[in-house]
Image (cartoon, rainbow, N blue to C red; front, side, top):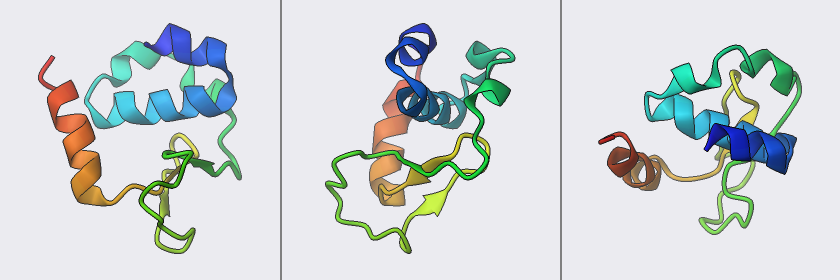
Length: 85
């Protein structure tokens, strides 16, 4: 997943890194995280903004530069099954 995300571009790599970290698989990133150059980045997690969150409602993850524009309860639904292994 990480290898594919990196090949797709910086925004996709940031999203994949965020999801890997949140699901407890940060070891997959190895030392690649600094290469994402997250300073000032605000890559929306949900590119479509399907949940209709404003930028003020979203939070920015400082580690990946991802703007989390998905409500917490939906995000848990995305991640919980993935963390089962």
